[in-house]
Length: 586
Image 1: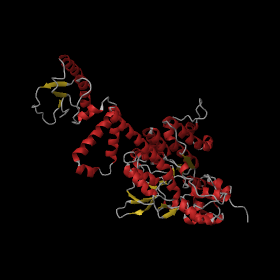
Image 2: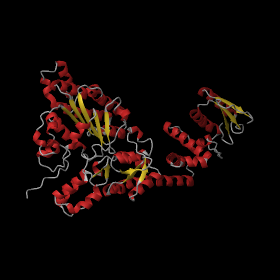
Image 3: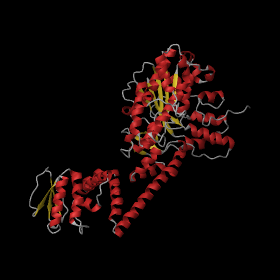
Image 4: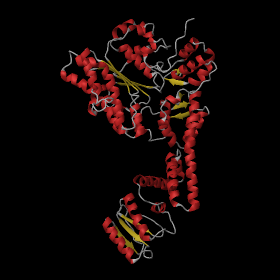
């Protein structure tokens, strides 16, 4: 028996995999199905490490001019001779991966994107000598590949040229060859993910929207485009105006077997390497994903474990996937999780399912809007899979296998533990604040806790029905306190509670000092400028009255001192009563 083929651990280039005789599970049927069912723009969303990049490399190898037909000999696509004659090696192909666009600033991300597109454009240097292109068209090409004279590692194209780069490159190639271009964009959502993490999301959305919109929308030089990514970003976010746009997610039955390994694929690889005795272990650890109607294994895990077994037959299954996946979004959600979310995570770890609505299309800005979006992200990124739907169309979500269950236990529980530890520390500060009379500590720790619990409560409506006045009051307090925190008002807890008619005795400091602090906050919160002060005759000296009046005039407030509270104010007026005893504001 001859030597076994090597396992393609980390191999993402199709021609290298075939030429170097690595083990390959035939997915070339994707080419035929794509040609039979393609849209002008096709987006495949799958979790990381499910073969997207290798499939994109396969498409490039098949369609690009100069293709060596021998690479596909014996593979499924080669059996369709007519299709191969019509399409193999017939197109100019632009192929980029946006995986490396991960700068911590917008400028760094732009530089990385310029490098990726500039490097791809450098493959077509024959355009400079083209007899078909005009000098102006050649100059367009030179603008894309021009190197910065001050930094030879950086492409010099401006942001405007960057936004037009793929459109211009497609036009130049189409004119030179007399054939429309195929465009392949791998990991299209990575720049948006990184921009969301590092705080320049709006700028990156604008750049990517223009870059994609220019080349994908009404481009006569485009035959078709294929994009891959992890999340399905809202069409309104970056794909505005694309009419012939086909999105193929993990719930779609089309193309369901081409990303990842089927059970037959796994049995085949185990049998080839004499590892069938490990089938049950491989299945329990790396199977369980449901793509469309097909049961799918994670290919990265299967290949990695088989490779280890070939060296060590006693090797135990382990987590190969999580260290290669982007967990930042999930961590962001875990940090915001409420008690119910944590309870549901525990249910999943115990092997039970949860019923949830899945939002297939989100913008990154919406990810933080609702903790329920957590489930859509976990589902899309491979941490959860579907176990069917209920009668309302909601998804039954489960952890797919032992590997991901270990991720939940080791990583997500660790994140929860840190969050709970932080909450425990806050509780300790609150307790100490009460015992030691430190109002600032109570203010700093208690109010954010109230805000969080009220906003995250899944039973808010029930609480409102049973304890309406209290819940509404606390909800208002939360809203206004967040407003104060956002604008960094110097507003102590006592003044804050007074705003909500909470009676406090033993006011600290003079009455004048309190009014000078209190009135601007009330005005900022309400917009009111006329203040009726009741009961302050015993608390303010004659000089205090004069100072308050001068200050009010400078601030453009109107202050009226009441000897009696019998004055009734009309609704919706610009007037407030501030009572020194009850701290009431009307």
